[in-house]
Length: 421
Image 1 (cartoon, helix red, strand yellow):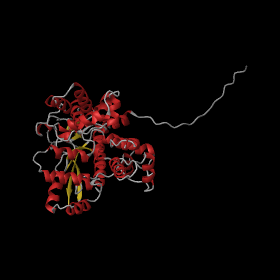
Image 2 (cartoon, helix red, strand yellow):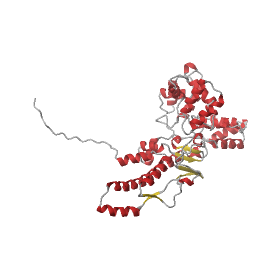
Image 3 (cartoon, rainbow, N blue to C red):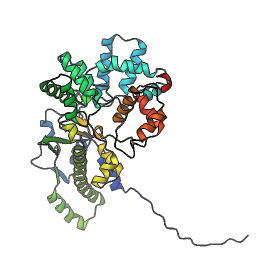
Image 4 (cartoon, rainbow, N blue to C red):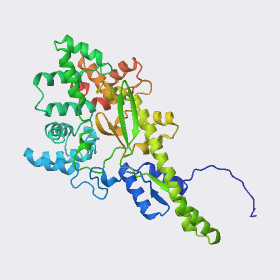
């Protein structure tokens, strides 16, 4: 057999992360706390970086100590409170399981179905839901264990003994109203039911005063700091980057010039790397903060009704929509939202909590809104409708939803199947 030697040319494209690009990506996903620590360390290690004279020292800001993190976490505090309920062994295990599924904002991030799976089916969904409502929802800070913003408000209202029975009843009517898009329609309905304008305004103020991220205001959680602050003024809003406590840095130009003169006669790659690192950090931090602000501004433009006059409505919003708007890749938005917080009129909230993806490709509808629609259809049915029939009914309205989607959100709503209704 003859051996033939030949040349073949092949063109191919591939994306490779340069060390600089990888560092920029890593920087982008740092929380404010982590970024400030990184900058402080770089100032110590890199002689070509220095703080500007007008920088506010972080040690002067309310005793915020970057070397001390929470002595007692939110999770530990919640577990500690379980002793007050005189629970049996099974209830304690379910309570700890639920607490483990609560994020730093206080939200229960797993569904009843998922928690059942996490427990290896040792506990069923009914048991888990009972412990959630009878134990977890009674813990402090009030509101923890919520699954939706409406439920977060309801928990705080129910736990507040200073609210009168009539006002609590009125707030429940407002929260249960399906026409959450229009606060004026809710008001008209309330007035028809015999309540006064003052009653309605007082109830709405009580709702607005509820904390939608109760876990973040836990007093020992020192490491959470908001990057942005949103202010509402005259039907408009303004989003500002919070400069207080954020180290303002600059290059030591005089030292760089002197070093460069020395390097002309004697090259030193390590010193050159330090200079380039200092320049990179300056540019990257600025770019990171500007991008975080752009994302925050667009989120607030979409959720202005939520911040302003309708504390019950969150519009659908996705990573892709934000990415298209500000001209970056959706994965960049995902990194920006990681561990980033915004100071709002409703308290400090994770930026990602203001996103709500649509469950339909043809119409904007959040999972909460779909669950409400399914509940309305089932409550008005004369004969139990299957998930397929509910899907057909909604698809006639232009939602384009699969049967399994209806099944998923019916179960999340803890509504039994048509066979069991």
